[in-house]
Length: 343
Figure (cartoon, rainbow, N blue to C red):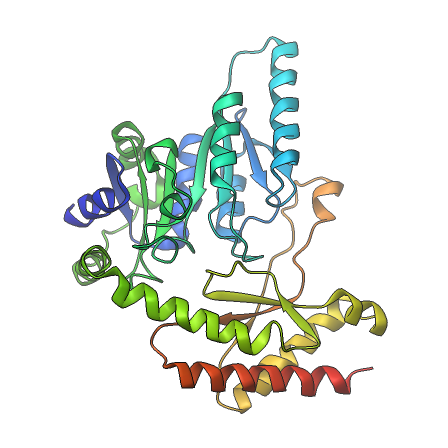
């Protein structure tokens, strides 16, 4: 309970509920509120946990192009118009997206999102798994970074496992939203509580972010800048789709490289896996962006969208600038070695 109070105070929301696992937080919050017959408008690039939550909800799903606010407005207008014309009972309607995209790495335009959700009367479920503890002066997430009152977001979902070095996840919002989950969210009702050690770790990390944010945030941002300097402008083969403040760098092959070599989706994935293996052989651990096939009930248009093959490089403030520079050089040289050999 103390950890829940600490998170709510830190974010500036009335209440918070803590889950024992980060993945199950968002995948339980969505079906706890959205049911069969309700409408979910979701970003086409949302992560796997969100997709599972949407699938479990059995709601009607409308997709909009990734981080395209014009396309989101088009979909919201269509849904509103259809409901007016059908004369059906009013259903619950939600917008679901991420603060920092897990699959692309860029940042959502939250002020515009708030404007649209108020105009068309939708509720907003915002997944801050990768932005909480990272964005903003004190790590409060996308709301702090873009000067938005956290109370304007209906549900903020985040992880305690990554930036806070603990475990579990949370959902912050109004008192009514939080209390509803205590009996309706499957992952809370049918799960054990977060271990005391992890809850204490999360609370102490939040205290550090509140009292000495610069000691944590400044080294991280310096390391991100250093890694960017080694990879994105210097590599002939890849570029980074992540936002500049995102410590998880998503590196994709440049379009001209793909077109000139004529590589298929599968060939790109095999090549990038070879890059991962080559960097590991030189003492640096990175990974490859991995996705899952679309859910069986999706339409043909939904199946046309798929993740672009990419490398994932996670930057941490646990390394010195010299170590980050060395890792960046190794990654860049590994990519050059593997890609230049493939014709």
